[in-house]
Image (cartoon, protein in one colour):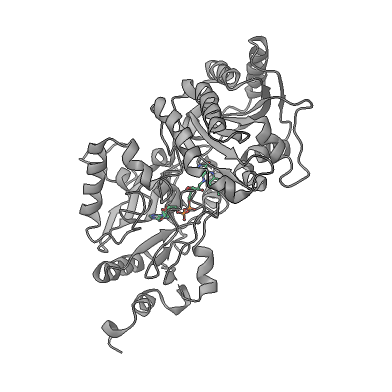
Length: 470
Ligand SMILES: Cc1cc2nc3c(=O)[nH]c(=O)nc-3n(C[C@H](O)[C@H](O)[C@H](O)COP(=O)(O)OP(=O)(O)OC[C@H]3O[C@@H](n4cnc5c(N)ncnc54)[C@H](O)[C@@H]3O)c2cc1C
């Protein structure tokens, strides 16, 4: 049959083959949802290309036909960027682009395809006596292409930076199907505009990332994990200063949790316990890691002793085994999921200057309570980065739909305080569809116009992830 007269989905199916074209609603269903269950999408089909060449052919055809394309990795994104919202949309899943192309232990780089799952990459780095430091709660399912496209942060950004800081080179398929091979391994390269940073954090609106050169670091030889009770976010911040003064970049994670969150986390699933015997209003999970084999335990103990003396540590315990460290981390990493068990939480992923976090928490908590009495703020997150996940949980006994009706007012209250501190309404989860409407209110008009110009230049027909970000 003449290809031109085939239905659109069948023309795409010819590129990847029938086996890798999902058309049945039951097969497509897992590609239409997202972890928070806020958005539910629709699409004509899901394609699973097996090579960069196939991605290129898909985009060439989509550009010709004006078909909306939604790139997907592990579908763990928190802003709905991965959800298709058009019955003509074609989802391009990168799941089969999962090859490790090269490991260069002299350059300390790994070149991998976009569909490699983050945890697998961490394991491969570990097997090669290296560290790939990006680490987040969804690491068992999120993929490198998704991590780069959302510029993921996670629990190690304090020292190693965000996904953007971990990438040296990219391979990207553009909207018209052209392949940009920017897979360079160079630390130094000042030959004009650094295009890789356009695609990192673009949430699939400027191109599809098909492969990347990522940085590897020396593997730590010792790790110390502490679970610490503190009286306030300010006490936690004071402790961070003490820790950084004594251990510098060995302080690789510094996470803050409210008592309410930890009490929820121990029940999710039941069987976990608070590592400290008596309750505290706030908790810190601090991790130190070092390439030196010895001495880190003493440093951790010194930090806790100095923190106690300064009045910022109420109680603390250091993990004595890897299992115990994992149990500490469970209480922090389960929080995004545990929120759901309250039968309703309105999440916010915001950042303010680190020094302003305590005031932000206090003022945002007061602002949401003024909006809706008895709501239960549950701030947690990456204190060391000034990044709080400021979840606002449903008042006890309130109907979920009644609570949901207050979403805008609660968002306005939180983002109002963020604006006061010149913070960001999306520290690490991206804009997606969730924060798109808010962007014009928080971006400089010139910056926004430049963003729109770049989008028009790279995707003149607007086929790439339409309705997201801009
Ligand atoms: C329990 C849990 C904990 C989390 N913790 C954190 C955290 O600590 N820090 C953090 O930053 N995030 C966190 N997240 C959010 C999420 O895991 C990250 O945003 C992750 O980077 C998304 O990767 P993904 O492969 O799942 O991408 P997807 O969800 O599939 O896609 C996300 C966005 O990227 C685009 N995209 C995906 N792949 C490509 C590609 N190859 N080329 C172009 N565009 C692409 C999509 O179109 C979409 O806009 C968490 C999520 C969960 C569920």
